[in-house]
Length: 441
RNA sequence: GGGCUCGUGGUGUAGUUUGGCCUAACACGCCUCCCUGUCACGGAGGAGAUCGCCGGUUCAAAUCCGGUCGGGCCCGCCA
Image 1: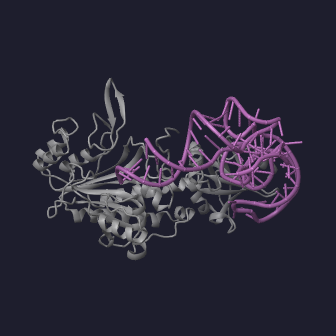
Image 2 (image 1 turned 45 degrees about the vertical axis):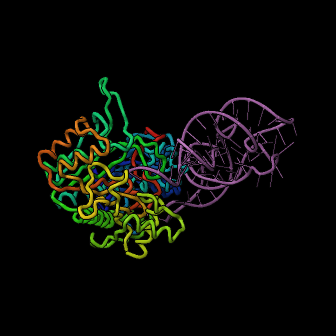
Image 3 (image 1 turned 180 degrees about the horizontal axis):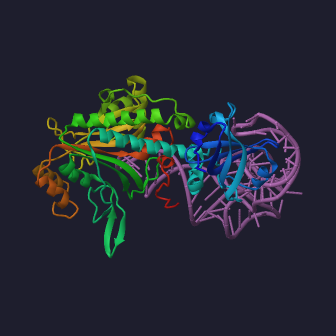
């Protein structure tokens, strides 16, 4: 008999069906016993009364793989309005060890216990609330892809094994490569720029690696970036794309992940309907506002402090109806300005660059790139780079042979999911997080 | 890299300040029994921890001291 999935069981009222899945929960009341069977869609409740059938379940722990054949009975007391009666249970794979972590009750997400959560990750993810995080992550990726498809982007994949560090700045991992030294890509930056010369509009959703010894709730050594790069646009259009994209992603999650949002107690999102209405603040504006509000002074810094990022998002939520903000006004004279960034035409002191903050965290960095070959070479040399180095030469060649004005972004997937679900750490939104202390599971 | 913190059954906690009533308590989970509508089921009973590790102080250490290992938070840097 064909397998029926949990979400379809109710369609088979008064018929006999076969379901397969994992034993998820036992509630043995004596004569009347309930078990839940979990499959890829969800749970089915099975009512077990026959003593022989009950006996089959003795000693069987959560995780036991089962096939259950029985009659579907509509009953409004059952979850989803239907359940299976008079089952014939077959134990496919008996499990006699109890799971090391709870499967059917909320798991502890306090920071000091994330270690336990990750140590038992393969089993803990069977917890529907944990699994929900990654349903949302999959939905967010789906939304990104839909948005990009609607706007005529081509999906690409760039190599993660590189000859040498390119962007500079961030620390890179080095590894042995047949006797030579290879590095792990710390960004898809140069490759997506090259592909602008081919496809105009490209994106990729791939891991990226940073060997920074950061130990915070925002950093990992391996994380997924949603990288986009767009040709023939200006800075305003770039902000428009990013804003629209965020709104699209959030609306999609709201529509398709109601159950997950409820499990994580996410009430609602405060976002404008139009990208143009996402508030913008310059770095110095935020410095001033923050200093006024808190007496804490960061005015000498050329970036926002984490406390300022949290503060401005709260401010924008209360006063501007948006939990997302763009931070502009980046200096073209500080170390935050990289050689491939483009300075503003009217005010060369400033870069055509913005950070997208959402619920207090930087989720994306956007910038226009310097597309004019001569200026690019000049900027590279001014920052101590060698145009002939194998790390730069392939990128520079595309500029030599014609690049339009373009810009793009790097967008942190895990940070986005973390903030959507109001989690406290990017690691909670990562299946198998990698940080300074963790390389397994 | 800097500062600050935490480590007690499988899981989450109490006990540590002021050493002794700790022969280590409670909840979840597990086992046995009872229970015909549970859904974080309920009730009775039970198993399970030499308190991260090593050393020291003391009549006495989960508790005090030193070292060590393993986590976490914040800052810096970034997505």
